[in-house]
Length: 116
Image 1 (tube, one colour):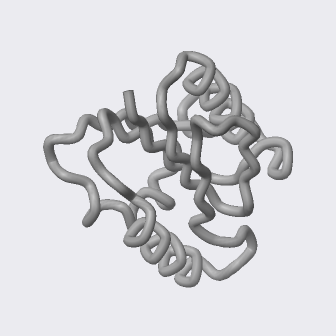
Image 2 (cartoon, rainbow, N blue to C red; image 1 turned 30 degrees about the horizontal axis):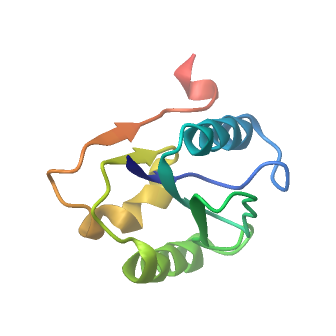
Image 3 (cartoon, one colour; image 1 turned 120 degrees about the vertical axis):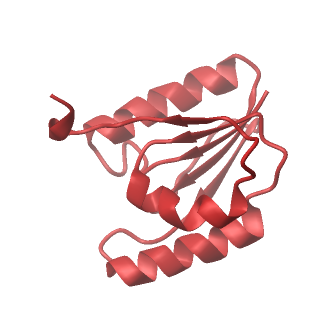
């Protein structure tokens, strides 16, 4: 299976619940033998050759700059066909919309204190 995952920062460089969840999930996806393309802010470092990591912006930059950087990265690196697109942070996924075919299944996670 080929999976694209869009999230925020990368654990442990960016500590947080969402980042740690995505970190654990990506490790299990790779361990299961699936191909993974990870799109996150910052500079993720993956130790496994089954995955590719792409930076969609620098944390702390203005929102407009991160959105533009994300759009440029998606235009260059979002290569279909994916079997599923896994979205963990809606704001980072917004610039991806023009690049996702309607037929690709999406899994959308809602993290944060608002979920309670």
